[in-house]
Length: 157
Length: 265
Image (tube, rainbow over all chains, first blue to last red; front, side, top):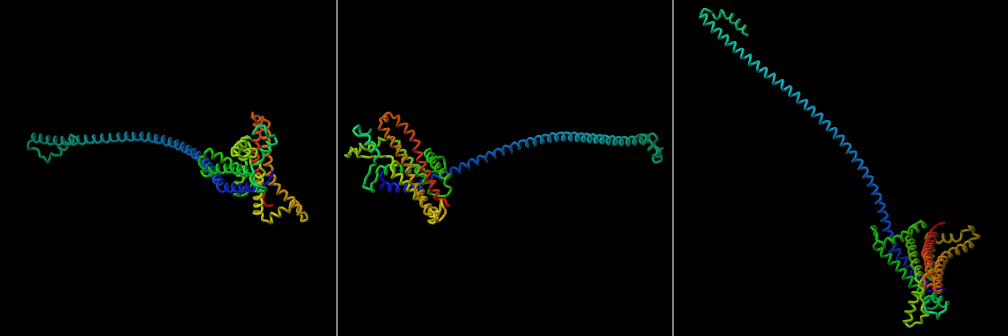
């Protein structure tokens, strides 16, 4: 074993290799590795977060669904109640209308009757007076006997 | 058995353990060690650079996944040992780990394949095949492991001085374990030995393990059982554990030593 100039050559080669590795090999590779590690860590964290969000959203959706159901049934109840109310109101109204119409009709009939009666009375009175006139001829003083006639008319009522 | 029965066992082993050398004396260069180690370094850098260029935080490709596994393994190892901020330590650890691993993996190439092929090429080019050497595992060459350890050692000294200052570093070397001026010289000897032992043990541990493994492969190859793959396969399976383990030990000790250099007492 002899130590010789090979050692110097190897030493130079060694230094050159280390320098090259230091400048052009190590930094890009270790950077890529560390960046990827960061990326993977971020990705995992994002996944966790997304899962959490999903769970929350599902819970919220379920809550919304329950709420909607309650609301819907409340709405239906309300509608039913309202329907009942409307029917009742209509019935009451109809009843009132009927009574009103009936009353009006009755009133009209009454008025007609009264008018007819009045007419009749007048005619009867006139007729009676005419009759009496014919019978009594001029002997009867209209003015003197009008109270008798009035009495007669009143009796006709 | 590469070149037939005319060579002895000693020649065979020696041939396998000799580097392809160019030059004289200290200025000898082991072309095979240098070439294979640089090739492995380039394999590492290009394959990782291909990922780095297209790296993004999106869905990774399969090759990107593989590379990122290695990078993250190194990153977590460094972070568990070194609790500071340093732009150097993690890339350094990655380079050491993958480079040493790739170089160690060359040990699993059957011991005769490449040397034999090289011999044939050398012979065809008119060289004596017995003197064409090709030792492909760079970590079985002490020059390689010492160069790595020396690089780490330089960084240790650099950071010690950068973090603690020259005074702080000298203080660390002299005031412990015995905190009395009378024994500062003794502390200094102890601490310097401890300091030098770190890179030396790094270099020798890796070298010793890989060299021994390689030697066993050569011995198995010599017995001839190699031809039916049995023993060779078992040793390879065992060695398969040693290869990444040694790469990992070298890496983790580098990180530990450098984080010790960063610590203030």
